[in-house]
Length: 197
Image (tube, rainbow, N blue to C red; front, side, top):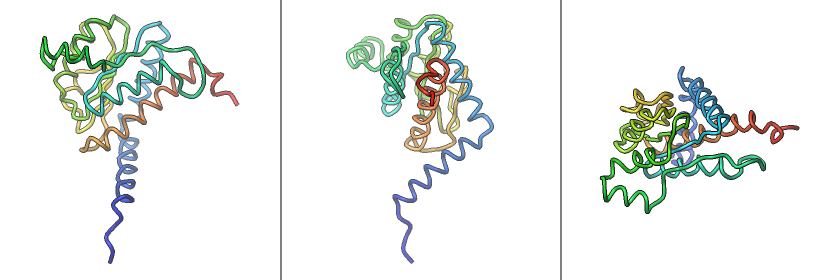
């Protein structure tokens, strides 16, 4: 008897992870809350901010570029920033320590009414926790894209979205789906002409 194909097994596992998220009682409602909060932020002419480490930083950058560029069709650029500039990050890390790299950016760029997307597959990244702490102090709405039970961040952010998985790759695969779905939901409200027909 042949062993199962590892590629097919990975696809099956990814599907199971997505199905588990959709079956969780908090998953879909919290994604809806995220979309509502993002829409309210942009409708008030405020900014979307995002941060994360490693692959989560890539997701933060992806989140920002979809707003400032184009998603489904041409429309006005929308204000979104990912804390990802290497010179800023290394300067802050060198002067204040790595735990402060995102918090300092929040202090410099965020204001009341903005929204911070805090991405951490473990929910325990110290520099993301510090960013959320500063965001809350400034009156910034906080959303967490999390995994592995949500970690410390699940109790710190306004809207915790937890993927029920234990490996970062599967968690990040659902995170990017959530990002795309939220952007589409907001775009449908703000630019319905892009979805006509």
